[in-house]
Image (cartoon, rainbow, N blue to C red; front, side, top):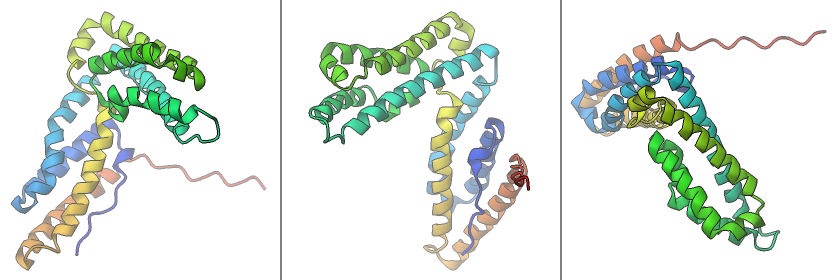
Length: 241
């Protein structure tokens, strides 16, 4: 059974990452037997392209992406701290307080919130902050997380204010998630596709298995080309004697 060459696609820059996904889809789609295997990755291709185009436009766009990343990190910090406290059996009331806060976090998108498009994420964070302050202020105080919530609100407001004044960039980005948010899922779907492609060889007649082998061979040629685009990691500096 042929195997798809191992490749750390996460090391590719955005442009090369998109092109690799595009080329991989084109190769696998040539074989009808693999239609179901490639379907999910193929469906992501148009939005990946739109997102890549829109994130290479202007300095304003780069600033928007930076501000969005900061509020994503602020939200993730809050979410993971609260998640940790749900396991706290040492301090009385902490677990219950955390579970109530987690209910609000989940109601506003949970871990998927940072994958929303810009406007939806802005509204979701604003609503989350308001709901927690209005309905879980005691729990927030118990866990001493008011400053963490304030930090999230501050970063969300910075994004909202900058985004609102950059009409041209905002109009271009409204309905398309930023590229860095799409890469993780695309990478997971690529890896799932390669695993399924390898497995398919076992479950089809020999003649069809040969067709899949040929697809894998062509895919491996493409992988080897893109491996050359990954920056080489310099060897560690030997210790001074």
